Image (cartoon, rainbow, N blue to C red):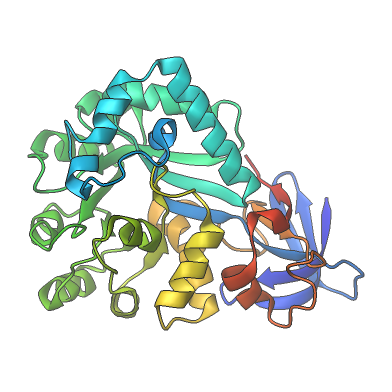
Length: 339
């Protein structure tokens, strides 16, 4: 397979006119050449934090606080998940997964509620998808054993000794929410020595120092934080100290669109388009232990091909800024996933 156009190559996303050669699901070569194609070829995105189960209750919870929405075990989302028919839940998740793939996403990191049954449900939804889903279970050791690791709700919500020990013994991924509502759970979360933190809206100077000293990666979700009114994470300060990736968070709050997440991030923060595109691709991949997120030889052929001649993108002078600030799901011409 050969894809021609303007290729955003390597970690710097250097725009190169040419072609990507794909063989057996892998990028065999990225070649500079004079081509006629108008496509913009970039890595498929990595959505580094999702709650796909919330697909059964999009836009639920107007007028309630974040704690009333999501705090286990009796927040609104948890009650709705318990009440949902399994077939309805799987079908709703499958539709969100289809949306993500059509929107240029190749991989995602899911914090999956519902114990073993919750993990089994999203695996059923993934059965018809080419997406690479990194599923982190919670609530029981059995859920962690059945999944790719542990996605903890927050250090103030429960004691995680047994689950943390099981995760470490299995060599699996451990992520935890921290600093979303206030700063009280950040130090306790860091004390657990996770593989990454999520949110960090209320990170203070001491927390920044600990993040830098431990080289602790952070996943931020600016649209979610805006929607729930908790504030804005200090993304510039975090990016100076560690690896930062982007996630879209709960599906009932926002669509799982990395285009929208990148666009808002570019408006809120003084970051280059290249920095933000890394947050939406290779940074999330590296946090999750995946090899995707860049267009370069030897990588899996996980690619998002945009129509550079669409009404929205025609005439673009800076394709990297265009992907981050202007592109939309409607501009996606095709998505190529090695899975």
